[in-house]
Length: 347
Ligand code: PMV
Image (cartoon, rainbow, N blue to C red):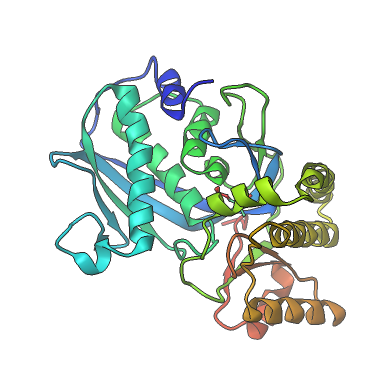
């Protein structure tokens, strides 16, 4: 079994090893899983136990600029704040930024190893979705870094290879290389060279995702830790792959038939099953807050009133509401400050 650094080296074997431009600039969308990824068969390579399926969020995601840097370490700026300037203790010392900097520099180390270089990078990254609150900001972040490096070095690689590179930063990032509905095929290759996203051949112009932020703060457990604890300690985990295979078939069928009710019911139930599974871990992992439950109940109530509204929830207390454009006005009246995204709307 190869390490993540060796997998990167293999993918970049025939590619330019020196920058071809002064900087690389890229954008990648965030994605929301309708059928969740929860559990790995290989930890360092982020190889999943199951397939998963997401929808990308159009213009919502991460913009990143990368250029070679003369300093003695990477220099990182997130949403206008310098994270690696040690004199700026207010910013540099919070756990959120420390984790962010460590994850990003370790990811860049994989490329330094593959390129046989000690070059550091200046990374300027702007995300228009809250970081670290289970709103998939790490997915768009790692995908944007890969795309910016591609620009900088002018690598000629298939999207599927870029998806593999992004996966090594964060599993769900492999789905952020496309707009639309994306399935992450788990693959079976021991190196994970067949474990990447694949664009589904379907669009749905009036499909909406509403970001309902209940608590914008950093979550207590990272998804990485929570996934590991669930997999290692929940006696119910063995049922999860079967459940995902079942939900995935239904979701794909619902997407092709534009059966919104079936899609919403299955996606919501898949998310709640994932959270139920986490509760059976030791220690229990509970991302749901009282306000999250209140919002669930509001969704259930509106459904009783005939509104086609469902939710999904990732590793955090915030909800992503799923609805169709015809109900957008009604739903945004019910949920304060709802950010509605229509990712596949025709321009
Ligand atoms: O990619 P990670 O390690 O942040 O894990 C993401 C896990 C979920 O967001 C909860 C589910 C998913 O499929 O995106």
